[in-house]
Image 1 (cartoon, rainbow, N blue to C red):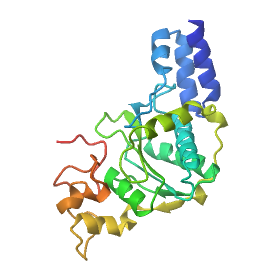
Image 2 (cartoon, helix red, strand yellow; image 1 turned 30 degrees about the vertical axis):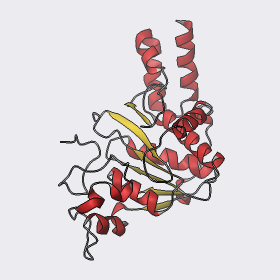
Image 3 (cartoon, rainbow, N blue to C red; image 1 turned 45 degrees about the horizontal axis):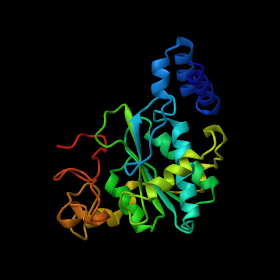
Length: 255
């Protein structure tokens, strides 16, 4: 019991978000050790990144967890000698996704890395396209794909704009584990990033429409690009066939 309560107090002290601090404090006051144990079982970073219900604690998706995850991704990029390349980040339409993306941008800028970020929710393949187009060291998408709306996640793609595999996942996980408490993670103003609206990525829309010169946002995709060749043969993400590329929500269940 003392160990769980001590862990909870430590996490509360290190959480910069007043809302999730208060949420975890309420569970401490209630003395619900089972709930605290669940919330303080740290998420495991793997080839699918992070994914969990949104809430307070190291076992949920929240700003504190994201700050430490971003710090780990940034450290990986720096130690891998990829700092000359930018990090690209996009996010879906879930309620917390924009805040998680902006928190990540602030961390990478503080680490001296270049960041290219989308200003509005976008489909995962569009984010991966931007990562490949910019030669990104890493591409991050804040999304939980088909999970319930109350969940969120943190997907990481490598320099080839496809989902990371071993040993990259283990290397990033080790950096996340060594991150300081979230409240101590350095952050920088967001203005130093390059911000792009999804509708500005004309090359993506041209590619998914078969290269037609009059491609426009919302045009139906076709050919190999729609099947995933655009963002790498191993890519398993993208809008369901027949759906429009723009406006398709990453949290909409696949059919």
